[in-house]
Image (cartoon, rainbow over all chains, first blue to last red; front, side, top):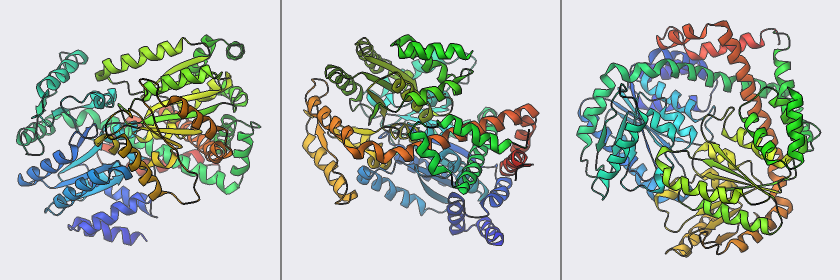
Length: 317
Length: 317
């Protein structure tokens, strides 16, 4: 079993994208041996720069990701792209468009694209994204772009795994901007006003600037606000210059590293402990009956959990 | 300590909204004794009907919630409203408007409104919302409306705690609809096309119908699609008729009850076990060093978690 993993890792190291894709799928599915494989992959990783690209739906994140990818490749970087997909059945049209573009980027030498469903990720979305980042990193990608909608706690947790977070706005967002949460503001490294040919681009930039001035201290690192028109590629070169400068500056990565490692350990712990206890409880076959008692108000979930926890640590005080 | 909780619970039962508000705050903050209090409150609850109101930003959820609340009160129901707040510093204007409206609803006899921040909820947003629902239920509210933006896994988990989920759409949502995820479709009980005086309302309704036809089986319960203009109140009476009928029908609540109770137990378990292990590990004072080793690739997080888990269950095989 494990030889198989090791073979895949060796093939991936030798440059096989098929092996890279299979490793990601297997880890996502928690195939037997995934934990051992991740131990190896963790130790192979740590070199890639991770960039989060986030913003309200319709801000043009996919188009911008596409353009950034192309130009970064031209500058000699190898790129991994993780697209966290809203996966709506409604969005056939728009998403299909995105996928088509992505497919084209995908076929560029040195670019590896991976879509992630936001639902059903074993162990939670942010943990799953972290795994994929780590595997792409181990595969030798220089820069990993994570594109995700900037709404929802889970999605924010995903971009928090990045070294640099670009928040994409558009002029006159109105209600859309409501959805960008306070949490995103705190972790933004660069603001981008995309679709800057639209009316109100300067006002939107000024609003962001005002908000940054209000919420930051004079000693804080200055957060750049850039304008782009992703569809034509205007402003993308400048954006990449600023991005690379930020990634190379000392501040960027180091600040978050310890907090992120701590979060990673505890998120993993949470899921693994819960999986263990859940399995143990299911084994006992008492769960169905317990659930019925809780609904009938014969028992309460809080006492049930206390009991489960006590039985876990009973002999281990 | 616990007498204090019991006093609050007694006051709440006697109708004190101040006591209800304080109970919610204390449980949210995990004040000492909260677990014991929740055991009592769980056994007092189970009568309220819970309605989730969700949709893209700008769909008019707050206005509709306001109108629903007013008419339900007129029909003799007592109402609890939980507003899950995007809490963006950007959104001062719009949110202020919502809050003002809510404040007015709040002052109606029999209505209790509670805003929840989406960040920093101890134990996760859906668990926190579940606690608030349970406390409002124990306080005797007949119907509890949960208003939340329909994007983000955490937010979807919140509406999953409801007996009936209304998904609010608007004509020509375009990009906005991208954000409504597949997960929402599966749990929608009623679709509402709000702002139905706008162009394209019929087309939007037809698109929803088509999507429902494609994804459902002939034997499935038919999901109603209604049109409203929340700002004028048009269509709200019909919507409430349909809602109450659905709540009274057998299917509504029972289907989800067992799955929900199971989820509640395991989410609670996950958080409590993790809290225990985390505290224990922090106590040992080894965490800082472990984090540094993980970053330096001297150790990997997977082995660290295995070790933590093993030490937890060491004497308990």
